[in-house]
Amino acid sequence: MSRARVIRGVEAMSEEDLFPGSQPDRSLRDGDPPQNVGATGAPDLGLLYRRQRRQMVRLARLLTGSFEIAEEVVQEAFLKVQLSTTDIEKPEQYLRATVVNLSRGHLRRLRLERGVPPEMRIVHPAPEIDETWAAVCRLSSRQRAVLALRFYEDLSEAQIAEVLGCRLGTVKSSLHRALAALRRQLS
Image 1 (cartoon, rainbow, N blue to C red):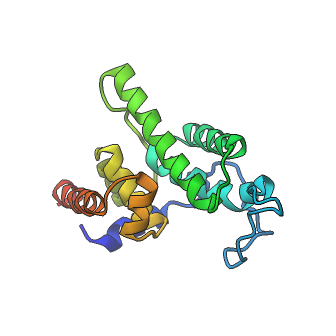
Image 2: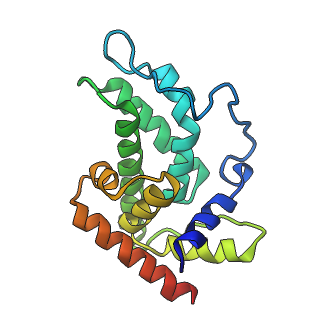
Image 3: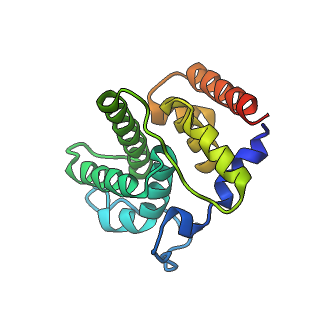
């Protein structure tokens, strides 16, 4: 499986697939400079929410497979940012790491409760997207997180290691094994 196929699979999911019934916030553009820190050094939660919410929900949806769970995970992540007593230098990175950790924690709890990994299903009109998504859902939560952060968030391997709190070598091997597993499953 090529890197491009994974990226096309994620990008082919429309906004409606990932955010049913919602309208994008067109008032903020991706090129706008980040201004998430207020005069006191604490994150401006309202601005951070407006700029990052949709992106974080999409990331959580890719990790958990459920729009409803993704919404809950992101709300909890924003609550953790608000309740954080330490000064957060990079609120976007802190938020992203929190969303990834909460998503992985949710999947871990489900696996323990049910004894088996939860089945995640996003239906898409293109069958190759469904096949790719099913293969991604069969990966471990760490491999799924590495793929989502690498191909959706477009983070470097070093940034992924920082978000996941692991070594660079672990990220590289997880990415390699995830892509190899997807190649085997989809060939």
